[in-house]
Length: 394
Ligand SMILES: [Ca+2]
Image (cartoon, rainbow, N blue to C red; front, side, top):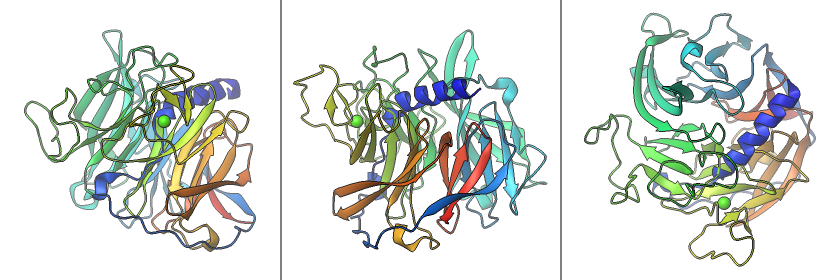
């Protein structure tokens, strides 16, 4: 089991090299404020919140004042943590339509910005149809009668993308401060991006996309925002490219979009995603030439704000900028981790555009995601243990 999930995570990271943490232009490139530079962080620990989950991959809150957490399980189920305890019943069970295992499964969840009013949420999962592996982005509704129960018959499929290989399926969904839905897809898989998807503007693979779930565009059941960067290209959904496997990304309250992009064989990276940005894959892995292995043309490529090599971990798990109050010294730092290494780091902007990475905590956890509550406190999802934990002072 552990070997299997380790292998999976490795694949995810490799795939997810796509999703570097990036400040996104989604908010109109609002000028980021340099963060305060408080002193060293006191010793931290992970405090148990809830357990008993099966291969959890994500922890999302519905931002509706209920303080519920939604735990995404890889097989195709979502469970709720309410008042500190997991509810017995599934919120959603679509396991019968999900192809799960390895880097496949129910991979991402995001709630509509007006969820409290319209009951809409969005998921990212893999399925097989006519022997073809596909990624699906779909909209669902919560039952009008029971806020802890999704309506499994309400599915409205927005987007289907064929996956050429089993791995590097991305999986993240997040709404930006602009109200648009951002979607992470990996390069399609195998190794080294043999199809060149990362650098191609004619495929959605190896990209972060931006769509309007409230509109339509021609025959598409979603709108293309008028200020997307490649409207005249073959794939107007593209927001940023050159990503390997952007497994997890998040928007900070400043509007910046931070992404952990899982690397190939050597380097994991954090990117701040900007409108139209090219994050380098597969010309570069992190800040290093990949194809060719030396002397690559770096013009126009955006380098990561941080990277680490595989002596420290092999699959980056993007997290969040800490905006809580329990660990004041951590405010304004980007917190992220690694699936296979179990480490949790902070990335501190010591001056505008200059980032310093330090270890916050070394764990034996198989970190698959971070979560953030409405107060800005951070949580860790342990894939192997099926647990949700909170990052707290010791
Ligand atoms: Ca890159």
